[in-house]
Image (cartoon, protein in one colour):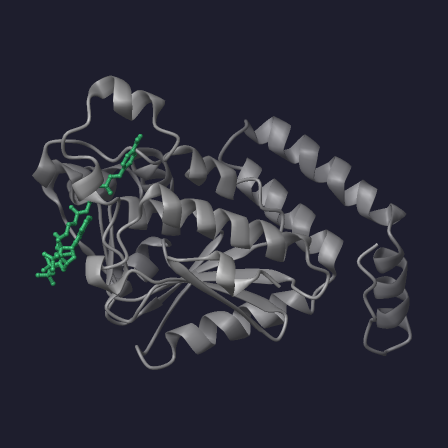
Amino acid sequence: MPNQTSYKNIIVQQEGKAGLVQINRPDALNALNSETMSELIAALQIFDAADDVGCMVITGSQKAFSAGADIKHMANASAVDMMNMEFVEYWDRLKTIRKPVIAAVSGWCLGGGCELALACDMIVASESAKFGQPEINIGVIPGAGGTQRLTHAVGKAVAMEVALNDRRLTAQEALNYGLANRVAPVESYLDEAIQLANQISERAPVAVQLGKEVINQAFEVSLTEGLHLERRLFAMLFSTEDQKEGMAALIEKRPAEWKGR
Ligand code: DAK
């Protein structure tokens, strides 16, 4: 369990087997700066290494998951500053987390905040969630994965409108386009995300980890390479105790007891 005293911009807690990281910059609608992103990744890495956590949830407040990168820290930057900024690398570091990460999104989910949700493995949205890439309003384009991950998620036509004309997607639209996994009332979306994280935490841990890895590879490699990787990982799971236990338990009509090895 991460030590809360080491963080200024996030709140961490464990809910059962779910590791919860809450962005906590209410005065700036949870705008993301380097310090916040660094804390967020550090907390996820600690949960990733913890045996009693199987899945993580990133959330903000009911009003804002995050309004994006902190514009006040970027306004006067040069192109070279932007190129050399470590900031955007935090989105890449999210990819190194092995356990699944769920974004529990309510209210504003804009710019870098939307890109943070897109870099997670699943999204549970509240009915008030508003997804958008409004960078066009400040003379730029999405820079932390929005043009790529949003297009993969919702398709070219919708992504063009979102990025070029600041179209905001409602929670229901996000669900219809396959961006969000589910939509829940504002009062219960976070509980629902935590419940989903706890359910996944009860599954065979090595299979969960490899399943996440190979599904995410579907966006990186060709179909042939992806299918090849899937077959190798499928076969590899037959070297785990959990595969023997899972199949024995099914045959013996009893619940499986996972060991994570
Ligand atoms: N950054 C900093 N502060 C923000 C902020 C942001 N993105 N969004 C809101 N705030 C602050 C406001 O300045 C205000 O602070 P005070 O004036 O009270 O001190 C406070 O939060 C409340 O905001 P509002 O008064 O504006 O609240 P409203 O409810 O009226 O409006 C809003 C909510 C979300 C519609 C509005 O705040 C808004 O439009 N915010 C900006 C949204 C935005 O444009 N987001 C995109 C940011 S650009 C990079 C790659 C990627 C990126 C950066 C670098 N590299 C490759 C290096 C990412 C860029 C972005 O995300």
